[in-house]
Image 1 (cartoon, helix red, strand yellow):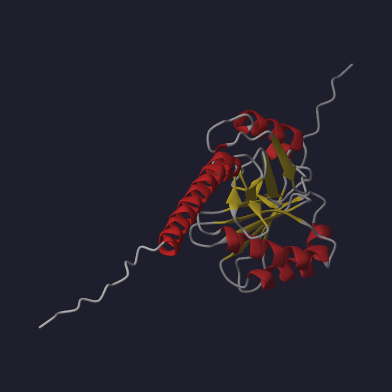
Image 2 (tube, rainbow, N blue to C red):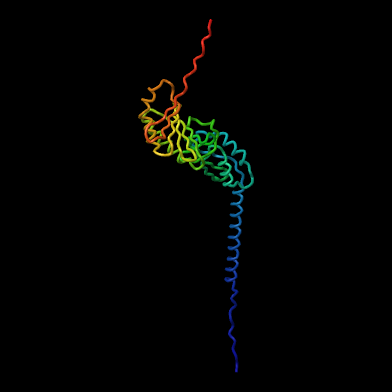
Amino acid sequence: MTVIRSKQKTPYTPAFVGGVLFFLLSLALVCWFATRVVVWVQDQQNAPIRQVKLYGDFGHIQPKQLHGKLQQQFVGNFFKVNVDQVQQFLQQQPWVYQVAVRKQWPGTLVVVVTEHSPVAVWNNDYLLNKKGEVFKAPIEQLNAKLPHLAGPKGSEQDALTMFGNVQSLLKLHQFEASKLAVSERFAWELQLSNGIALKLGREDTLKRVQRFIDLYPAISKHKTEAIEQVDLRYDTGLAVRFAPPAVQPEKRKA
C-alpha cells in the first residue's frame, strides 16, 4: 500500500514576512512619535516663563507693583510653574478677590485679577465687600470715605443689610448714617454724620428710626445745645441727651 503525502505550503511567504515587518515598523514609529510628543509636552510645561500679562479693572491695586512681584517671582523660572501656586500667591495680595491664571504658549503667564469692592469698614481693622465678606487690606488706601460697621463675628451680612435699610430711610429726610454697631445681644446703635447717636435696641429698628425723624424738628428746637444721643428703646417716646453748654472763659479784670 502506497501512502502519498501532500506537500503543505509554508505560511512564511515573502508577502507575510513583509507584512509583519511593516506592522512592527509602524508600531515602532508610533511609539517613537508618542514618546516625542510626551517629551515635547513636558518641555513646554517646564519651559521658562518669559513674560507676565496682567489684566483687571484696578481701583486700589497698583498694577505696576503687582506685575513687578509676578515678574520677580515667576519669570525666568526653569522649573514647572504651578498655576495653583500662582493663584495662591495672588490671593495673599491685598485687595485681590478672585484670580484666573493660565499659561500661554510659548512662555507667557496670563493673569486676570478681580479686585474687592469695599463698601464699609468692619470693626475698624477690616473691610466688607458688596457680599458682606470680610477681607484685610490697608484702610489708608481707600479711595472714598466709607461707613464704619461693627459687631461680633458672623454678623457682617446682617449689619450690612441693616445699614442699607437705615441709610435708605434716612436719605429720604436729608439725614445720613456714618456708623452702625450691633452688640452680642443684637441691639443696634446708629451714629449720624452730624454726630447724633441713636440707641435703637433689638426690635422695630426702622420704626424707631422713623420716630426719630418725625420728632427731630421738635427736639432740635427744645434746647440750643447740640444733641448728643437719642434713646429710642421705648414703646412710645424717647430720651434725649444734650451736650453740656460750653464753658465761657472768665474775663480778666484790667
